[in-house]
Length: 432
Ligand code: NDP
Image (tube, rainbow, N blue to C red; front, top):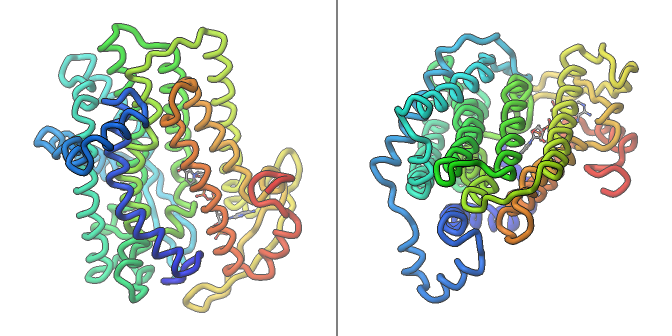
């Protein structure tokens, strides 16, 4: 615990800049999308003219309405997480040798959430446009609320950790930023990371995608095909996520990244604001693509989401069946890798070296990035800002591939070296 992938200086600089720059960026992005026509130069001119006071003026104060919307949404999602039935699934063995247990009710929660939201609109009980109209205040409240929540996580990690998969690096900033606990819980069953990452963060993506679509409809009496493509692709992506949620419990976010600012603040604030931003842009830009172009983009996007899903499923099935499955119609080729847990036990894992996982070590990031491009490209090329998410995602996943490679190298040693010899490319086959 406490070891960092990059050099200590890079780690500190990147941690401190993320901690200080992300919150104002969220507000500036929202402001530009909603009040400055999506134009960075318009926002820039405004800031040049009004300087710091101008920035303070555009930062919306969290209002009672914003807090109420967030509280109702969070309470609803927490209740669904606790109460909806779901299969019992076990996560992977943790570094301390524990095996966390989860309830796989994500898909049910997703369906109930969307039906409830659409039902509230349809029957005139709550208009999703209200969410769009208070978006700045909501993001502002989320920024402060999530920061406080991360302080709570930090304190909980010190005072009342839920399991032995917890510990301090001895540095307060690293502990706050990377987190203390691997899977903190409230009581025995309420898993905090499942809540922040899946039920709050990923769910908000779908809810906001629908919100933007409805807002455009309420404004114009119709929805442009660009918005339809964007919303459909984002919903297909989030549906895929919840369909495969139990598999997500085996990924880096849940199995390796501790509950701190990096992952939790990211899921509570960055996902609803930045991930949904291409849709936010389209609300005021009802671009018409024409049926043919719209369909091409839609099909390409769905294909990428499917390939990304298939990569994840291939790894999951391979691990679940202990390698006794077919990969692209053939018996999989694999490496049997042994490693030692932090408690000193020796265990083995299988590394798949065929199928998608034989093309490159993180091939699944390619369709992930392309899918994001396809749900952004309906915005066409008038402005750069809608593409911020795709660029951010590309940097995030290239960094993540490095972090994961480094972690696996230290976990599996010579077996990982063997995998790298068999599958030499990190992400893009033949190139990188
Ligand atoms: P992965 O699903 O790639 O999981 C990485 C882990 O898988 C490794 O740490 C290792 O864990 C194991 N592993 C590595 N190589 C092999 C192999 N050859 N065979 C079997 N197991 C292997 O992690 P991610 O969390 O990065 O990705 C999961 C999904 O989430 C992807 O679809 C990705 O695109 C998506 N994603 C989306 C993001 C977004 O912001 N939109 C951000 C991050 C991910 P072990 O210790 O068990 O061996």
